[in-house]
Length: 116
Image 1 (cartoon, one colour):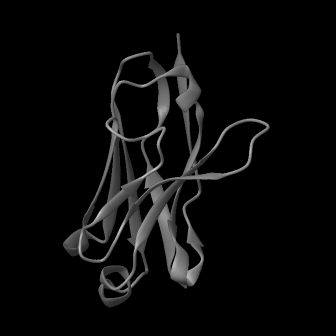
Image 2 (spheres, rainbow, N blue to C red):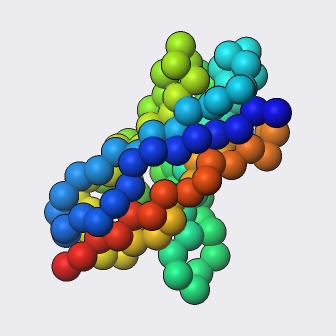
């Protein structure tokens, strides 16, 4: 069964940048290419929220909190989706998850902590 493997995350200072990676391991290229990919995050005590989506043809959508600061991208040849985050704020502190919704595949999560 396919799964999503994440890397990245860590302890950051306000204003810094960070990139998260998500590789579709065991996911066929055909499935990866044919599906939208999402990044979610869950802060302590809060519900999981959708941060960014990239469609199969590369269109992107962002939560208001991410617009102008986060960039989602994908490399279908590498079965990989990225989340580039800049101008990080303490309120970005959360566990970040990548997601292939159509198959309910989730990454294992990556903690991002932003200190003021």
